[in-house]
Length: 299
Image (cartoon, rainbow, N blue to C red; front, side, top):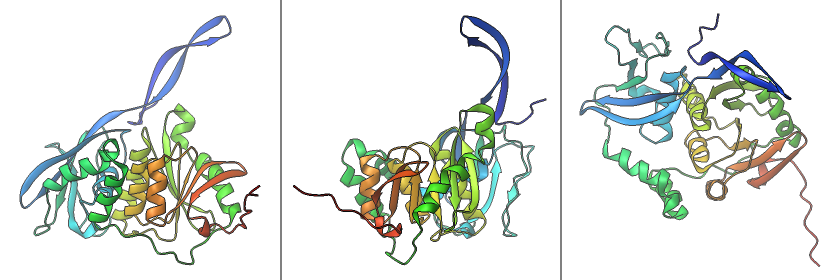
C-alpha cells in the first residue's frame, strides 16, 4: 500500500510495440506551497512555489535564506503549517522536528520578537531574480547590493577524480527518482566525495531549497568546505542559492546558462557542467580542481 504523500499511484496504459497493457505506475506529487512570514509587523505572503510535499519546513527556511530574507536560524521562532488542529514545530531547543503530515500546503515562518523583516524586500528580490529579462548585469548588481561578497580564493581544492564520482553518489541515493523517474535532486558532498545529504523535489530549485534549509536549521551554514551537485542544468537561481550558502563548487549534470557562468566568475565559484562519467566541463574557478590545463594551440 502506497501511503507516502510525495508519491501517487495510478493506472496507465503501457505500450510495448503494438500491444497495450493496463498497469500500475507511480507519479511524483506536485502541489503548491504558500510561504508566509510572521513578524512584529504582521504576517505577509512571501511566495507560492510548486513542490513535491515533504520537507516543507526546510524548503521554506531555505527559500527565505536564499532570497536574503533570513540570515541565521536564530531569527526563527517557529515554523508551522497553517492548520488550527496542527501542533507547531518549535526551534527553541536548537533542533526542529517536522511533526505534521505533508498534505498541508501553507507554511508560516514566525520570526523571534524583535527580528526586523522588510516586506518591501520581497518585491525587490522578485525584480532581481527575474531581471535577466531586463539585463543580466542588473541581476549580478542586485546580489552585490544585497551584500553578497565573492568567495575567497582559498586553498579549498579537490581532485578531478572526486568530481567524476559525484554522479554515482547522486544517482545512487535518489530513492524517489527510482520510483517515479520524475524528480530532481540536490546533493552535498565533502572534499573527498562522501555524500553528506541529498534532497529531492519536482523542481531543481525546490530540491536545493530543502538542502539549504536543512543545513540552516541544523546550524551547518556556511557550507564553505562542501561541493554541491544538482541534477539537470545550472541556472542563475541555482548559483544564487549556492552563493548565499557560500558553497565554493557547484557541479551540474547538464549545461549552465550564460548568466550562471557570469555569476560564478564574478563571485569566485567553481562551476562545472555536463558532469557525466569521466567527462565534465569547467566554466569558472578552474583553480579549485587539481588538474594541469593544456592550452590550445594557436596557429
